[in-house]
Length: 238
Image: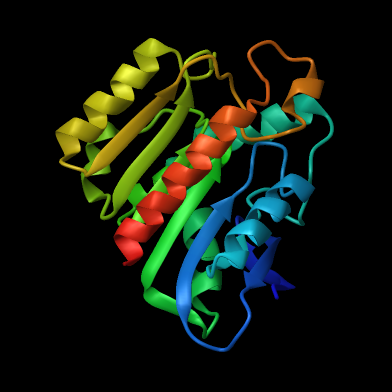
């Protein structure tokens, strides 16, 4: 039985409102930090955190907007993302605060932690990894892109898996090549999975209702990337 409780922590000058999911029992378990999609920590993200927890992981669904806010206005959301995307240090500080909140849970095995991110959340967890945080794995599902110093990727300590839709307008072929070149040059243990026919937000069942070009749910890719993520967790956590 999964238990859920709010976790409040300070970052970016505001109170962040995450949700911590703990599996049944009292033993220590691997910890996973989950960074939400661009709009905020909505019900879909909480469902994914709960599903991971049912498999035996302690999961903190982090908040990177503050106050647990979920944006309904696209312009306001994009303005917030613009603030973050141009400030690498700010993104890293928000990620580190969330990681510290996860590690404060006594049941989390500090030597077995990972981070996953959806959409802009993937940008957040990659910057956390580039800070040198001790993450055994970093997973990005339909990741976004923000300007950064590629040389900092050499600080990534864990294995990286990026799952990208071949038809994702936010990650066209030239950006995918840049990502691969960066990971290759860093010496990181990396995988980039490109999924034919899939667009952005392929893991979000609500995505097709957004009415945005290049944004759509893809059940097949959602299943495949979920299995790929769990396979990597099995590999790094043993």
